[in-house]
Amino acid sequence: MATGKTDGMSVQKMLPLIGIAVVAVIGFFTLRDYLSFEALRDNREALLAWRDANFITASLGFILVYVAIVAFSLPGAAIISLTGGFLFGLFPGALYNITSATIGAVIIFQAARFGLGDYLSRRMDNAGGMVGKIKAGLNENEISFLLIMRLVPAFPFFVANLVPALVGTKLRTFIWTTFVGIIPGGFVYTWVGTGLGEVFARGEGPDLGIIFEPKILGPILALCALSLLPVILKTFKK
Image 1 (cartoon, rainbow, N blue to C red):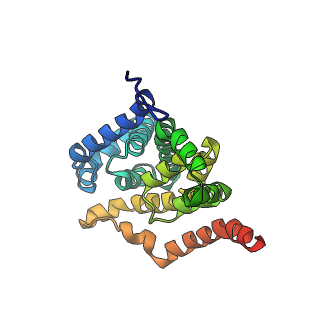
Image 2: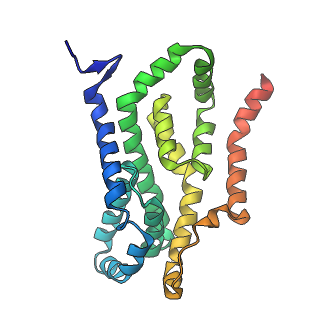
Image 3: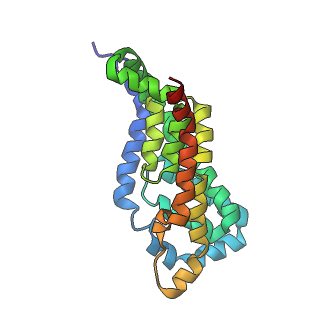
């Protein structure tokens, strides 16, 4: 007789994660034209007028949209970060961007942990061998690992949200490492967004590759090296 459970997993626990996946797929095919640089360029005057007339409502609306984009892994995360700088300046734009991204990340982290995290974490604990060693290594160097995933631009944001949930990371550790780790990138994209007015005037597109320029990437890599220092010291002691 079916119980709705499969080896420790239940359909009820999987529902939030399934819902996020469904919305992500639908959003990928339906929202690409709305969450784009072209859409921002074409509606910039209306957005600026709405912000000026309803600053608090515009701020809350922007935060809710950003949280939804991250929580449901919808397309347009880079564009919404630029929009934060364009509409609200470096401050409070950067604060809005970083806070919203963190909240959205926590939502998908909780959904993944509720649906799969405990089950997979137990399986990894009981696996032994190489899998068990990987799990132990991640737990031993958890903070460094989480910060590196946030600081290095090569890691997709949704991957950095899911992996910690699947290895049993504590919620409070996930929250503060996410917030701190995305500060450098959040400031860079917000800063680029503050100059979109001039970009629009020239009929050009934003240079999102700026984060890979030496003057930007260098300090971020230095922060990565600093995050790895505890791991290096532990290895040296052993």
